[in-house]
Image (cartoon, rainbow, N blue to C red; front, side, top):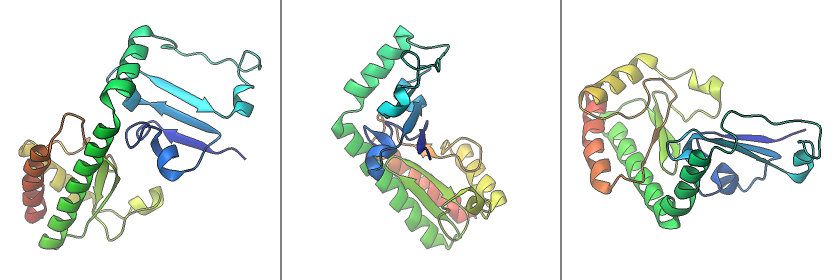
Length: 195
């Protein structure tokens, strides 16, 4: 049995060591991408020693990639991981994420909307259903029409909460501040009120 963490979105976004750090679980293989690139094309994977020994050399499996060792992508990732995402930045993003999540939950309660907010750190999303889904099957219970109306209202007010696809999450940026969250929450509250 092999345990693989797909941290393409959460890796280095929610903590320096991503979901592996937050969960306290060490997978056999971890896949990273997007967030570590600082806007540049980047992907990486890590593995336990037993799996690394399978990759050439000394193993027989060869790993190819278009951007393997691309110096610009490597430099951008290094800067993001060592200069931008400091411990203080992680703490600030986490605090902003908690502020946004609590504000959204308060708004949902105030307006009696059937919805829940799911997320960790500076990553979160909303589901228009009674409980936070634990797997894909449970996400199918969300009210797609309500989600779409809510999302469209926000876009017309200048708030780009997430990609225009159900189940996508929004991310707090290192450039954001409390006033950005508070301004967004006012418009998010109006969107919930409209429902």
